[in-house]
Amino acid sequence: MITKAQTPFMPSDAGYDEFRLGVLNAHFERIIKAGHIQSANYCLSRYGKVFADAAVGMQSYHQDETRPLMTDNIRGVASVTKIFCATALFKLVEDGFIRCNQPVADVLKEFDTPSYKDITIAHLLSHTSGLRPDSGCFPDAYYKNAWDYIRTMKDTPWLEAGLSIGMYSKPGKEWAYCSFGFVILGEVIHRVTGMCPEAFITKNIFEPCGMSDSGFWNYCPDQAETDRRKRLADRLYIQGKEDEEGYKSWKEGSSSCDDSRFNDVPMTGGGMFSTTQDLNKFGVMLMNKGVTAGGARIIGRKTVERMTENYTTGDIKDNCWGAGGAYRMYALGPDTRRTADSLYSAGTFFHEGAGACCVLIDPVEQMVASWFVPFATEQWYADALYNAAAVMWSGLK
Image (tube, rainbow, N blue to C red; front, side):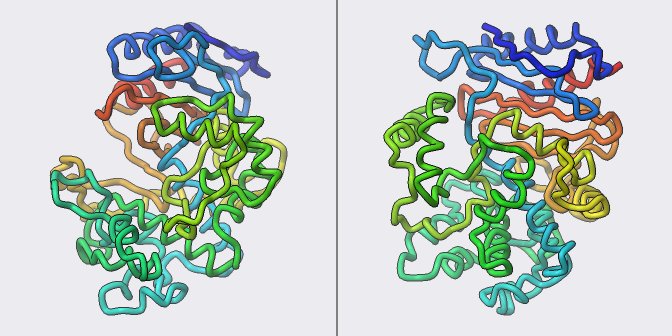
């Protein structure tokens, strides 16, 4: 089933071949039938003009689901959160509070040790810090991550507990995907501004971008936010049992943070929820060099250029997920990979989120795509991301 929302512009207004949207819908229907994804929805814009906003499939993972998927469904965006964290960090950079090549130890005293003192903010932003990477990056059944240490070392402050895992390699030597690094960057925001990073991002990015359907799962500071989640609850996409619990808590108004061990741990590594429309607004802001569609300035032109420019050099190798030591392109927050699979322009930047979702910005073509493709299994499916992006970009005239 395909649901389409009315958009402010037609594909022809944005120089886009409308026929290719039908091909995109057919692609998503095909991989839903193949059992790769449960459903799909996407929002496409060019020159800041939203010309496609559609959903394919049903509203939940239940086999007997009868509700069609809504174009404005809400779901967790996982690691897409990281590009928001990076934007917040760069706001502090351009305001003079921090520098990218500054040692993290200048802000977080916990890093003032022989093991961690050489790690910079840029290392954390580019996944080259040498901190131990996420579980699953390497086939190690006995691997422990930072969250395991935080969970078990209950009498130790969370950051100290997480750092107890030790280093993976020397800073700047290798690319290794580390979500905990972005949690640490959230704590940098906290120490510099005195605000929890979720509040800082909400005030300085969500609100001026008009992202009214976005937030952080464990950031519910007041009754107004609880009431907002009650209103949004019926738009939550239910990918599995965990989402069902989330729906129940939102609907009942019990979504405030509990007193768990992780209450003070920043959610800047992957704790956001959003819609494809909201993610597109954010992407348009970055495409517009830091200015929203409504004219609000988030960060400056040169700041966006530095954040999204490829940062890693040719000697930075990637051994995660079977990459085999290949050179890994990466910017200071966004991903900048471009391979033979990519139809988008050189200079494009993006971020994927597990399970899966993506926001992709092509400054040359002035195209922004945001899409949700909840995987039907625990496998990772390239056709939901790379193939889908190729179909999207094939429509440019």
